[in-house]
Image (cartoon, rainbow, N blue to C red; front, side):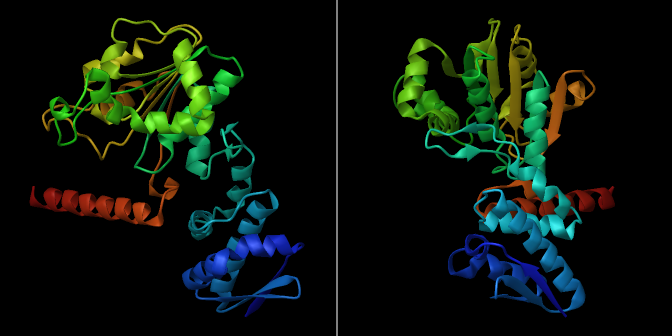
Length: 325
């Protein structure tokens, strides 16, 4: 069976095919079809069902391309996942929401449906809890939303914090004063801010007190008004620390709490404050809880595969434990 899809402009084909036709090769491999560009149209050949799915994926990718999106391997893999789930019609939603423009002029926007719901929750709720694996953009999108709110003068300060919990290493063995010791833990937050604002603007706001990056312990006893407060790596907070953090919220403020429940570095006998908060706050008005998964990973495809492998391993182990009981 052959199906034809018309292409209006040559630039569309170039964007869709990718360098060395890698995007099209991925489509061909995933759906067992062949795709050729002939006389201003794509010709998809293969078994009827495979051709139908491949054509849906190509049409969805062309929709992204028409709206100015650069088609990457990550886009292609995500669209393939949507097509297999029968959700290809949702692709058009992904190009609409630019959160802010980075220091290099790049638009920052959600790349998956899960990320889109997460960003919507941040704008709609006073408190948003984003739970998901590494690479799902939890921290980066939260920082982008904070910068957008700051530029629009909806808040006066951006406060970024995370618990300084050691993952197999001791703080005391790190060189330097206390700030030098905690800086490595805060590095992902610095990196996201540098990307959004540029180093010069970041340092200017830091000196003025408009931006604060500090360990969670520094939050005790404060009330934070007119601020956008992000708690990162929240899976490593104790229940007491999480309650302390949540009660710092002042008037005109917004909070985003991010974490990965599969990467807890707390002692085995200590309950994660993130896990407890998700259970305690799930029905509280003004609190949004968003769960991202491996389909929302926007890093290298290997990150997605590694996360899925670990999840499958944990699921199998849990099934074995239940069978023994």
